[in-house]
Length: 479
RNA sequence: CGGGGUGUAGCGCAGUUUGGUAGCGCGCUUGCUUCGGGAGUAAGAGGUCGCAAGUUCAAAUCUUGUCACCCCGACCA
Image 1 (cartoon, rainbow, N blue to C red):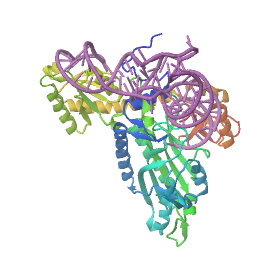
Image 2 (image 1 turned 60 degrees about the vertical axis):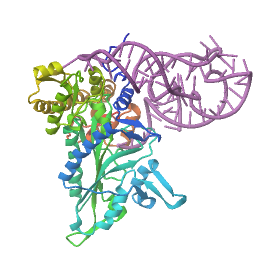
Image 3 (image 1 turned 180 degrees about the vertical axis):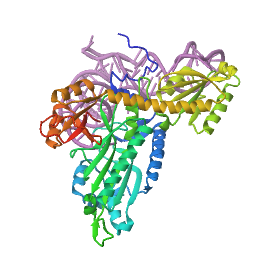
Image 4 (image 1 turned 45 degrees about the vertical axis):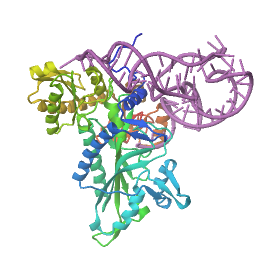
């Protein structure tokens, strides 16, 4: 049977092979390219442009919640890494080492940071002396390296870009408040900027960060029904404070160990963006992270006045703070339409000789494919309105998909059925035991994603083992 | 680390069974005509067939070894 002809014939359809669709999209939009080092990707200007917008939006939120940026070294001495036992055990298998400087072997090998808790804590132990030094609220934007066995651009790469917040507090309550607050920042960002609805809650013991007391997470559902961890916030308790001797003299004259948190999000979010919003034509970017929000495609650009009009509109859009661009390349309009749709640009503005005669232009939406003639007079306001509408609509679409692929199970039969038929989240009561969790994973391939903050009681017993249930839990296959 | 697959022009592939001049589509360069959903035309450029040995008069093709990448699992942001 002949495949239905699509506008983009060179990307694999999502329902045929989602992985290939993903690879096709990221390569053809020129977001990334593979490099000569396995697992290390080049983030090209289009992909990096998205990351820059993510950084800008997030950084503003960090500043607003009282955090400042700092930068700590890439290399960590082995002795430092080993100071927190659970932490080193968790990360050791994927740490890359520097063993030589120039021609000389090093006296102590240096680890390339897989995360920066250890080196930052070693500094905090020097900086924190008194309750007056607290809280310490720092964030760093950097790269980290984790030697991964299997890699995929954005989702799992040996080197990736991220931000990691590291804070120190006087009390357990303050640390817990910070942990929850920053997950809240992530959630608000995911929904309002990335237009990705997330489930927020606590990780199981098995899934929590190595060295943390407990880990909170936000989980999103991809179009293929798999969950993606989009960001985590850890309450480190006093584990690192004890390992690194971070003590302060409190108001009451007592020497006390500090309470800490760390939280991070990475370029992996871009992978989520692609897999939550993409469609058969390619990428679909929410306006707030689109490097180009409105592309102007001149039709019959060689004809007199067309390019001039296009540039005139461009100027107005740029002045209104809209990220816009005129595509004056020597290609047919249809070719450009397809390419910009592939690249996920939210709004396309078409302008040709016939439009100019009538004082109008065409506005086309990437999300709904709707086209409308709009008077050139005041068109920047129209574009701005459209961008807001698209941002809102994309969140709604993603939410509707997520809800349609979330299944509530009260029995093991329903649980199995949910996994086989729904391809998404399965909500069920769970006992909280690691053994039970492992058994569920072996039987079904799904793992616990989180125990959501918003709890309800579906039943008194665990959906799998029948022991007393502790928490409503989200299960899914995951990236 | 297990199971499967693929390496031939920038990209996608045919050619391998049965050894005999390196092919096709897209893309790329130049000219002319086009331009409202992937334009037409003419002339071009581009390859140690992943790598290394071997068999042969002759290897992309057969043999052995090796490397890389992709997919599905296990492990992880």
